[in-house]
Image (cartoon, rainbow, N blue to C red; front, side, top):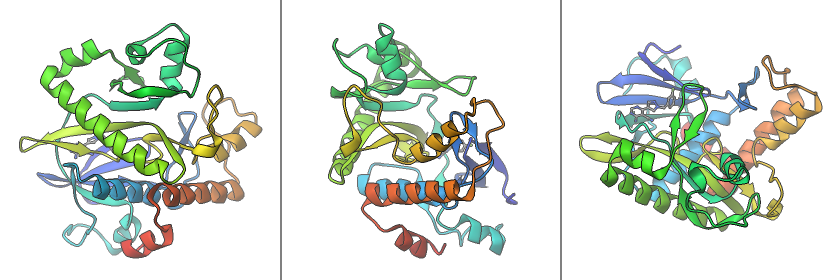
Length: 294
Ligand code: PZK
């Protein structure tokens, strides 16, 4: 535990307060599968996710919350904590979080496919008939969701989102989200990776609308190897399929506690995260670690 005041815990992330206007955003090595946090961490998973976020903050150039990854100005940390945090943390601008998850979908999958199959729902309002599971959509769609108290995001209609945010903010978030998705999807496609969908969060700081949170990571996005995409069929997830397949092989019913991961499954999962980093960013992960001092 850090000496900094703790602000929030996510399933696999933590936020601490640096000062009145800055937060320390930390990606842990925890992993969830079937909505359960597994007992064993995946070494460097938090660094992979942070590396992907930093790659896209840099590439996109869209106004965002990143201030620095240099922790020298954060006085309260011990040497051990600096070692742990290297490569997995960012000092960010504290923002007023907009309480809507800005989801963009380029392909029909997950909760949107379930709604579509069941005759429609908030995410399918702007879709034509006759689509199959995992189909590419005619154009990317903005399908906002809210954090429900169940922990599961709840898809909301355009009309509901407009009521919550006002038309002006709705349209700005839709424009920004679609623009970012298109840019990232184009980048991924050049590397043989499909960005099926992704989720953004935004916040206001000093009157500016900032992209916040992690961005375009394997945890906030669905990335598919392009050569494994077959419309009409389930597509294996880049990073998590390996650990899901092993969990399935144990006959686990998805109720806690999950089975302990054997060392070879931990190591295999780590390899897939590292491979995802390298495929998505086009950079070498060992170089990322070295540059981060990790
Ligand atoms: C903020 N979250 C979600 C993420 C958690 C919770 N720049 C910011 N300013 C103010 N608040 C947030 C951010 C960001 N990012 C994000 N909650 C608050 C979240 C990670 C771990 F526990």
